[in-house]
Image (cartoon, rainbow, N blue to C red):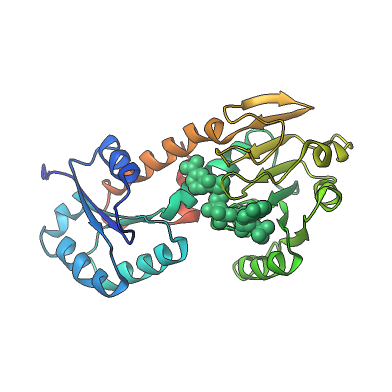
Length: 289
Ligand SMILES: NC(=O)c1ccc[n+]([C@@H]2O[C@H](COP(=O)([O-])OP(=O)(O)OC[C@H]3O[C@@H](n4cnc5c(N)ncnc54)[C@H](OP(=O)(O)O)[C@@H]3O)[C@@H](O)[C@H]2O)c1
């Protein structure tokens, strides 16, 4: 059995490679983290070849690639480039979690699932047009939920819903949430609300929330950790805190699950050399924890 050190190669397009991702890599068992920053698409092939030509096929599971950075779309493009650089069995496991989007969306949906049977449940994703929101809507819909993707602009919600729906049979519905009235209407009948608004932006006021006085809401999750928080009345540290009949979670309350998923995903890459961890596979892995 190979005892070669476990090497995590971090491909980060940002000017500085994420310290957060490096620390999690070490904590998840990597002996070395090779941080490549300012990575561009045209450099990916030679970086991958450096990973796959240096160890024998029976040792390649001790090398893995992590794709990070702030740009979620670029992260997905790098993933495609990495996969096209593999040569048959000469490959290593790879995970993409640009801006923490895949692990965060997985943690949010797994948290909701603790309180509500998602099959057939109505779920509202506020500010669902961002990368975290889009991935959250996709995972919820794949669990059979009836998903509403909300934006301040119906046009943007429709555009993003159309994109997500390309990969779905269970179609999601775009909704407008431009003020308290439209937000309360979007929330009506929902058992799940997940607020995926930008940092420091409130997307659900107390009055819009209590406007949904039908008592259907069972779980409210806010992913924004920067004040003002995304859901008025939900604290950042809330973790299954009951408020107005709903189990409430703030960003820190969901953070533990996110960290657990992130570490487990890195650990799993060192078990085989052919894992591809994207939004869906990271979610499935989180489900099995
Ligand atoms: N805990 C973690 O590790 C972790 C990791 C990643 C992300 N997060 C958090 O998850 C949340 C979502 O992340 P993201 O990257 O998807 O967010 P994002 O792209 O920055 O923003 C998401 C959506 O928020 C809405 N928005 C932006 N500015 C707004 C404003 N001034 N007023 C009202 N709405 C506004 C926009 O929707 P519309 O314009 O369509 O309304 C936008 O598409 C953020 O709060 C982020 O900090 C946490």
